Image (cartoon, rainbow, N blue to C red):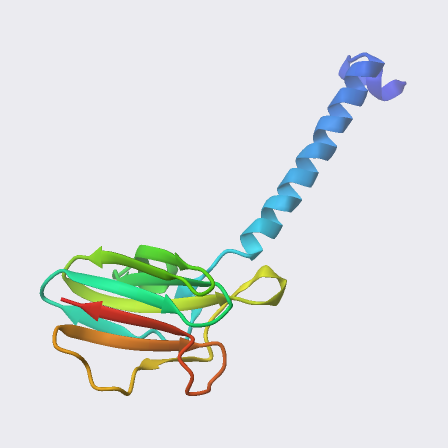
Length: 159
């Protein structure tokens, strides 16, 4: 009763204020959970790089059952995330493809897979494919969850 008199609100007003504060705490807590599952490609150790003096076309193929996110980043001195700025991204679902275009320049191509618990995880292997390149192919990259020689997600960059 003293609190109501001190702040000058009715009993129902005090109850409504307390409920609103409790809901605010719940929503703030849930926002933290959503951010924890956010992909952070700049934190991955392996960042394969490619460059082209002309615009390129990319095609990503998921050869597994998991979900991948592909990020194209450029280094910008003094930029966000240790200097890596994401300039394009693509969601590559189970046994599906993604494609798009990029302007000329140097790009770091990072793919993350959706791990257990809904967190995005850096791949165990990110490397240039060992097969010889077809004409017009700037780069062909392979990503896999573990450090095996498998190629769960293949990224082909063409002029």
